Amino acid sequence: MKNKFLLPVLFLLSITSLHAQYNIKQNNVWAFGYHAGLDFNTGSPVAVQTGIEGLYLGSTGPNAYFIEGSASVCDSNGHLLFYGTADSIWDKNGHRWPNGYSLMPHKNSLGNDTSYEGASTDEGLLIVPVIGNPNQYYLFCLEDASDLENWGDMHASRLYYSIADMTLNGGLGDIVTTKKGIKIDSMLSEKMIAIAGNSCDIWVLVHSMDSAVFRAYHVTGSGIDTAHPVISHAGYFDSTAAYNTGVIKVSPDRSKIVVCNHLEKTGIELCSFDPNTGTVSNALLIDSANRTYGASFSPDNSKLYVKRWDASYNMLTSQYNVGLSTAIAIINSRVTVDSEAGGGYDTDLRLGPDGKIYCDGFTSTRDSMDCIKFPNLAGTSCQYTKNVVALVSGSNAYHAMPATEFVKPLNCVLSVPEMGENEQTISLYPNPNGGNFILKGRVAKGNEAVIEIINSLGQSVYKETFITTDNVLNKQLSLGNSMPPGVYFLRLTASGEYKTISFLIGY
Image 1: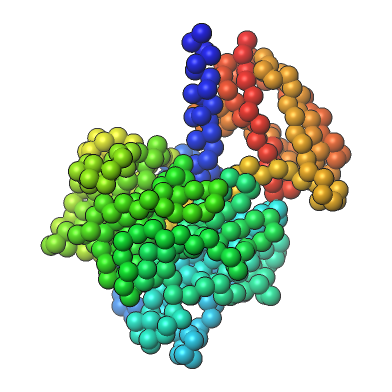
Image 2: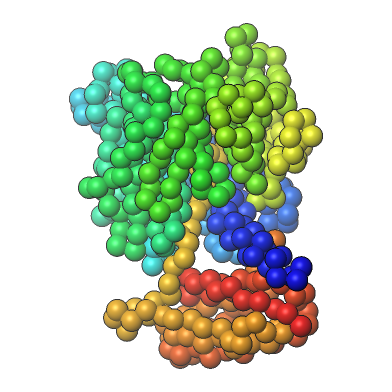
């Protein structure tokens, strides 16, 4: 009787872990700051040198280059592909792509040259897969507010997209010339994230600069729907540049959104998100007195960490219990887990593939990373630890973290392009089984396919890569009794799409 009640729990745990994206191998290498990087492929972060650099400020030392909102992506094995800022892209070897410049046109709508503006945005670059094409990626690039502040341009803070193709530049990748710097929107804040939907789709979520309005652009196998963003009204502020700076982040289960603000208006808003529709709702104001910039949720979605300033410009790292039901309860749960005197500079937080949260360490040279070791735990039990990783000599993380994580679509059905509209149906039998079963389906001939089995803890316990020799898949897997009884998920990936099947092993 005990196992009958346990299996649904294991099933739900498996679903939750599969929805999380922070720990997929595509997020295993980060590039940020001035030539800084972290590689998580060994399980723990290892400092590496990258080619990334930001806007030159004309000074020397760790503050000479200013950059926010970088992004990077690896392949499904954790091998780095490329990385960049809102306006430049580098290949895995640290060289700028031949066409990886000027992803945002350098003239604003007033005709002013803005070559030295718009390249440092809180969440300036977002890398999103082109669904159905494993060699291509959308690069969403978001300007900062310089054109509005410096020139009075009322069409400032523009959103653009370009398409990157990894078959170009000898396999190192480059921008498709005819798909570069295409404008989508304007008058946006510096907030931008990608969230996986539930139907092989992705939502690119941005926020209005001057009102409590979210816009979610839908990315599907048909492309980007730039004409019909999903509009949501959720929040408390309504004035010029009210939401200008500070990040937005999503919880691993995609149910919550946090909005940080730290200039015109200050504070933290916590909202609900619906991955089916792309809508944002139920805003709670959990802080209105402090400037906040960076944030991250814990792996189990129960805790929220933010970087905020007090009245004396001390940098505080605070924890909130966002599993509580009311704004008052969440506000009263706040605990300061770290404090730095005079730390009044912007820095973000990011959940790593190892389940720990990382941020720029507060040192005079900005050459180390701090870490929250156990972010699911309440209060100081989370163990905020300083200087856990020393960056490579000569690199620094000044005013920088890789703010946006890569996400891939969920619940995609494998298709066979040469068979028109026929969709693949994958079957696994017998189910339940004792570790030996047959996988049947239809796949594209001559392509690489990957079978991966994931246990109830979200851990990969079996992986096999093979080349399909026919359109019909008929493959027997013999795991024997190497897998303990329980619920498992088999994911078959081919032609850039995948399908996941749950099955039960019981002896």
